[in-house]
Image (cartoon, rainbow, N blue to C red; front, side, top):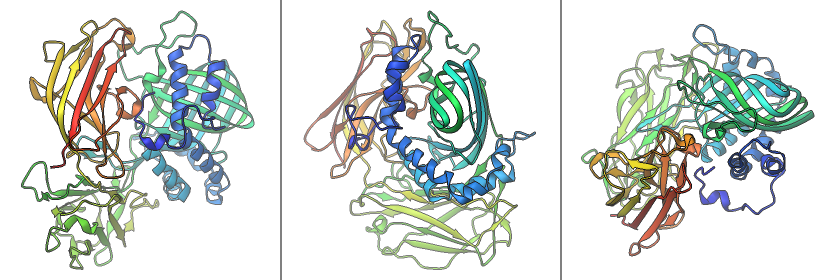
Length: 585
């Protein structure tokens, strides 16, 4: 499956450890029960999946049990039928919105959301209504709400939001029986590597046993819109398309009925609400601050810190208003940010949330030993919070930041628009700042197999070039950050490898060559590895090949990470080798 997997995933489990009962349902069953027409690659992908996500699945099962018996959840029983209502504009019903916002504030759900985000999951689905019936060939239909966490696309940070999804699928395999789930008892949970999108080409893999009450594990996804989307075979001898190429999430379905299922969802459609519930979220860029540098906007690689507080909206309309003299805003920064300054720098609003800059009036004088900025709304009474609040601030630290540090924002005294109380923030009002920007220097060598590959805008089969590796432009310090290698003929373009071989599963694919950094405890505390990443696919979707992590522990030593891209053909010898020496200056 080859998703990014940091050391934290392996501290307590190895591939030789006994599987957990629920988390490794796939792991323990697939080798014996996988249909003969399914490829060995698919079985191996399922085993990898179970190994990687077993801890998260176990936590999800515990949350399901808690919420099944939660009185508040039980009182909200009828709302999901309208959750994915798709009227003329795909509006979410007030009942569904109210249900979603209340559940997102349940401690067990917020904790599960944090765990999912740390595992590379971009969204959590909950409150599912579903029904499935099958006799070898079957059908499944349902609806759910999906809580999508903030994530970064280039320099743009998406807001936290809730969307509704409805779907149906045709299934095939060792699939017999009928089962279903109606909210809130039992409760289903799904985990998304990509936010949901409308699609007419659903695919999936599932395993479940239900006698009375039971559990079904399912991997789901969709084939991108193409003139002729690939079809999965229904019998031996067909051209098998690995469905894991299109898996964008997984579900843990607690359902009622009598059903035994092992197979694939080979045809289906999903519809996504056109308008959504958008929660408030807070982001700081850059979030990794290097000691000894002035972030005052005089250099492009050390810009002013920029904060964005996304406006909460319901169906694209403002959901909060400011009250003159009553609404307050507090923004706090860790004190180490300004240890090289004599006075606290000004916080400058580029937009106050009401499409102006003068709405917030300061009520305190921050200092370098207390970097807290407090404001009261002095603008028009009843002003809608109709745009993102943007501000900038300069900083300069003379010491290495601590391992854990964060900047926070808080609101009080806002009024609601409409019957649904949309939260100002759902666990995302705290933005973690990293302790160090990693820099290193060295070189890379890329050798392609000309039988199956070519390099875009470059003639030849081998590139050796200098490399100055840095995380200065990273939005966050985690192992999913990918850094492109520049094309030596045009530094404004990334290196891209085209697949030109005959394997139809890889036909038309293009691959970036680059590297990852990730943070580690201690000092120095960086690791890197060489990576091939498929163009147009999310990094968290396993569409990549990565080398071994190398720790940058000694500024006098060189460290090398090498990876061969083996996709497309057994004889593919395309190899990327990166050698770096740490250099924090």
